[in-house]
Image 1 (cartoon, rainbow, N blue to C red):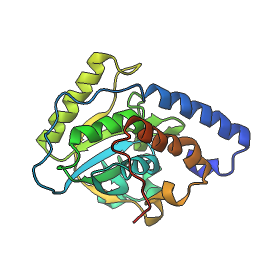
Image 2 (cartoon, rainbow, N blue to C red; image 1 turned 90 degrees about the vertical axis):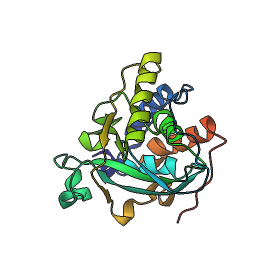
Image 3 (cartoon, rainbow, N blue to C red; image 1 turned 180 degrees about the vertical axis):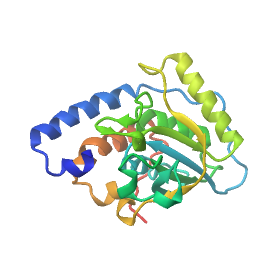
Image 4 (cartoon, rainbow, N blue to C red; image 1 turned 60 degrees about the vertical axis):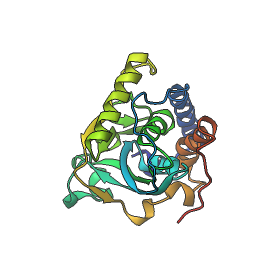
Length: 227
């Protein structure tokens, strides 16, 4: 697995991955349009939950925890059962889980559709099937685990919109499926990018996503200092 290997790789291998990451990121940040179908901003503050899987949960969390209107984020596992929702088991690629992030947000400050726009714009490449870059396996698949019919409707229509517009170089393969449970990842995975900024994987794969969020959505970007 690439994350466990990167810390020991020679510099040339890290630079090779950096080049791959940069080219993939560039293809996913070309001014992706906002959803034509979205929920309006709520009249009152509250809390709603969205669950996204877009490759390694370190990077997905690093992006969403820096979005204004997001109240909290948790790295974890979705798509499988509680019985085997542990890192060691999920990385065997046999449990059905995807590395995911639970995003709790205030619907009076940000819409579900805007979260989706960020998800497709800077979090990952939604055209890669069961992988993100050098991370390969179903646990790295692109997925939206919806909590209600409104989220399902917004998600499916947005994917159709993006595909019809030819926004990406290939069709979107993102799975849209009902949420059947979210299981928190181990504590050392939480806010991993924040606490390990010098980790080669974070520098190569995740820091560019944070920079892309700042560039593409400056009005929504906020610094994050941890819990």
